[in-house]
Length: 467
Image 1 (tube, rainbow, N blue to C red):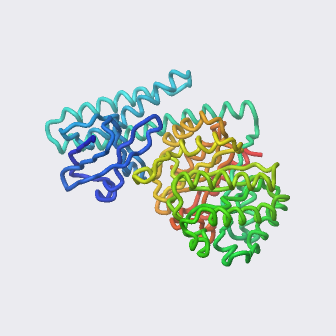
Image 2: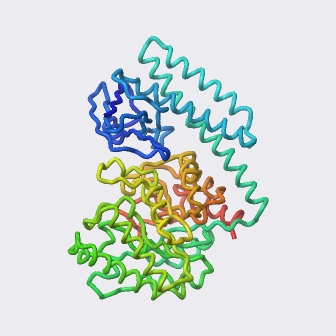
Image 3: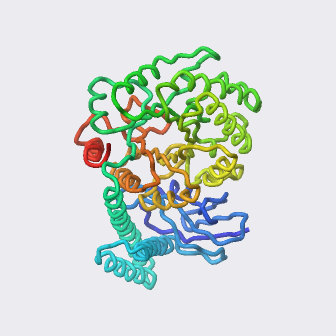
């Protein structure tokens, strides 16, 4: 049993309750969260977990107006409380320092001003630690968190620019696919704008809408979308064909909860019927998503792995030439705070790949808010890609901006993803308010307006970088 306690600040960047309810201790080779018990009042936070090992505290924090995950350095369990804001500042400085060291070790050019700024931030952290007045100490620490985060963003931008220039030097235009997820047909005006901005499209079928009654299928909307795409020259993919959310599972399937053979039969029948219908018009499929994190239909973790393997086998029998991917929700492992779930996203993917099923790519769903995910910054995303790289499998990415935030952070993340050679495709989750795929809507791109500059950014990327 390990206990970590923290003295809480008097000044917060947001709602203290919302921040502390999402605090967790992470550790291990993949820095995955571990089941954590938390207790707090207005002065102290106490976190307890079973493993008696050191770890890092992570929690959501408002940085320069946007929610991000901020973390401490590695801490050991001890009875004396840490000072929360000081430790978050220390972790922010170490994060920036480690990134600068990694860039230098890889001989990646960085502006000298970054080193100067890091030295100044380190001195500011020293003032925060040594200040006699707690209020002054806290104020300095909050400034350090903001400044170190900005510095990390600037260094990540330098790395992104270096890697993007290298990719463009070797192959221009880039083969990266960028598109949106659509579930409803577009108007003619939308269609024209879409084609100007993207070179790919992802259609999201909703099983609950398509098969409201068993064996009674309504393909009308998906037929319209596939017909439209066939005349646009866009790279088409369809998926996820199934996930385990309440919004997509038909009610009549839910009646089989706990009955694995029947559930597997229902899933296989729907997937097989859908693939057979569109196999001549689609070569790229996201077969399933969220099986790593969902706790639905009475299926345990091993059941979901068995179901995933069966669906892969069924799909390949129908279309052996197709390219198949499977998706991972909450790829940072936020769901592992639930003690009933033990497979990390990396562990789930590795186990499925070791089953002998070859897939064209893994799909990582980075959409904030979806199924409890927290927003991450471009450096977090870059480190996530590096974590999955040893699987030697290309990656597709789904992401968007939170509804209440500007899209600056998300667009910087898209640029980081484009610069990564391991990323095959990028899909923005929400084209418009009519295109809703989850119970947590994200900011939409269309219609075009001054308040929604992201679509113009995508149009410029399409013209300058992509096929």
